[in-house]
Amino acid sequence: MLSFGLGIGSCRKEQCHDPQNPECENYDPCWGKLKPSANFLMTFHHPWGGPIDEKYLPEYCDTIIGAGATFVADYSNAVSYTWKIGTDTRSFTGRKINVDFSKYVEDPINNLQSNKQFYNPIEIILSVKLRKSECNPYGDTTLVKKKKLVFAVDNGLYGKYLGRVEGESSDRVIEIFGYTADFDRWVNDLLHRGRTAIVNLPNLLKKDTIRIIKHAIPYKLTTFKNFIWDSESDEMYEPWKFTDPPRYYILDGINFAHFYIDRQPDGRNFITLKYKSVDLNKNVKWFTFKGKEIL
Image (cartoon, helix red, strand yellow):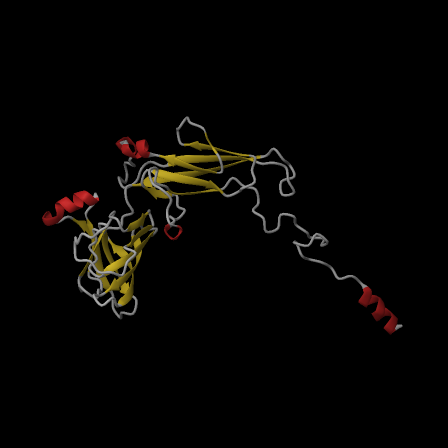
């Protein structure tokens, strides 16, 4: 009797618990698929610019520097996408749209009165109309998502920071600031903006000050959280040495710098600065500094 019972038990079909297997009782046809939603992402966009190299793509963020923004809906299988941009009376449609806010940021009335670094928030509303499917059995459903977009004058990069260079045993204070010397005013006019100086960081060539040109030819990206400067070359140039094609670099031994700015709840910036120093013999050394803004 015992052996007979064991034989029956061995023939019993095992229960299936795989949501990806249609033969299982807990099968979910939407498993691994993006569920229908009206969620969307926002990012920086140059209204006048061309495509950005993928390795320099801006982050998705609700705070943007500049005058343009890109909006992208998460869900890709909707019947239609309708966007309402602030008080703009125009109609915007499509899963991904680029919007020029130049007139908005040029009007001083739109500055946030409590903090002139920012502009008044703009309400962005996305309405997504869905089609009937396994993941949406109801059909003809419209989902709505609202977010606030804020434009900033800059990313607040300039200031003093207390922190440490990786590998060092003590903290140091660094200062990041912009300056224009009388000697090279005409060059700064050519480049639209002055230099950015970082004081009191290790450098193979100059021990106290690193100078790079913000918004010059080698700059790749400036957003609310990132500033990337990359000369794409290990060659060394003297300050303002003109070459063919022209390169207006002040390298001071630095040909790559990535600033990542993370605003803390107390309003201060936490900065991670990673940069590459190249000496005249093309020896390369990397540095990383992390520190918090001193107000």
